[in-house]
Length: 371
Length: 186
Image 1: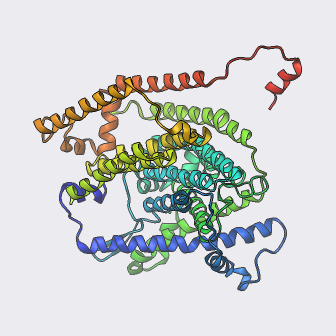
Image 2 (image 1 turned 90 degrees about the vertical axis):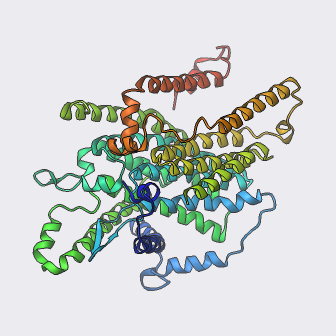
Image 3 (image 1 turned 60 degrees about the horizontal axis):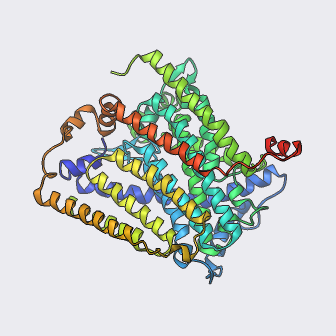
């Protein structure tokens, strides 16, 4: 079990340096993720441009790479409107209700195994909870409050509509996502994300790696669809449908508050992509890559290079999934609200239940009754 | 350290619970409820019941309270409706019930009948099973399978009941075939 159990039952047996390493890990991971997000907005805008056969931001810096910086400066300097009719506390608090859960979610994401420096083990995660997956779902579900309160506090019919739609969409697809993940949990037998990745090493048959997407293709599909719905990305972005509700629940938000909502959305997208990579695309495993590297690199460098290669593999897969998010956004039209609800409750939910049933029956047939 | 944290989260839970009851704005009450639930989840973590803690946040704070907030937002209560009506009899009943509940709690603490002794599944038994998740599922699906199924049946009945209760009364079928087409179309 994780260090938390040792922390409380056997007295504190993490010495100061371990605690320091963990604290540094928090800053490093959060820092890296938060600084990647503006880059993600650049990718989105240039990707949008490529798909729409035009240029995209290319004024600010080479290839428009400083555009996110310009956007950040703009957000900082915008007038922070105080709405007289809005509920003061909820209006100020709503962006944080969206942002803090999104940030908490990356606390359980593992980005690699660990780095060994002599005696010290530096893990590539902030925390490897044995209920990591559930924790992630729990904090993700807390993000709905940001949407709800943002819409309500703006005291504006369009915002309230957007908020209610967003919230009902998110909770409907949370159910389907949970069931899609139940099949994965049945197969892996654990809630710990790191353990799930470890179980995806090696090959399934011949050249096909034992990744989640090959074991449970339908769950992968379901998870992909619900990930789009959870993060309010097109084709599920009716809550912030630009041509329909102005901007939905964040209509009345400008400047830094809007930037917070915006960051929260991209952070959520990042978390869902990372989850997709960890559960279905083998995490940091690329069968054959490890053995290739251990052949090429000298013995004494292997201890450092192999973990770095894990980070690299993870990043490449993550980048591919994030590109997929961007690609779908500018390819598909938006779902109407009733189509969305019908899809979630009347099509995907029964299918996910059938998937769980088939998985359970299959596992029982393969492994017999539980001991 | 543990008892300091327990004190902290316990006080937070109590303060949020008082907020639920005494806040004027129903949305702030719902938000206080979320605060209470998260504090209780933290207390579960202190008791090393990690799975229950996560369930508390995932299901209760993350889904059920959202539905509460939905209802509050959609059925926008006027400030008239929010004022407590003169309840008369029910006020007396509520007073006596809360008095008896309070005295039960005080008596339990006084007689110390729920402290110290280990339950039937103490900590080392849980470690033997391989962790709290394994221990919980082992017992839930073998010894306590019947209460588990009964609980899910009760939830199902509640869902069906609420759907039935929320249905609009059936209108007289005096409409032409055109209306039927509208009803069955997408």
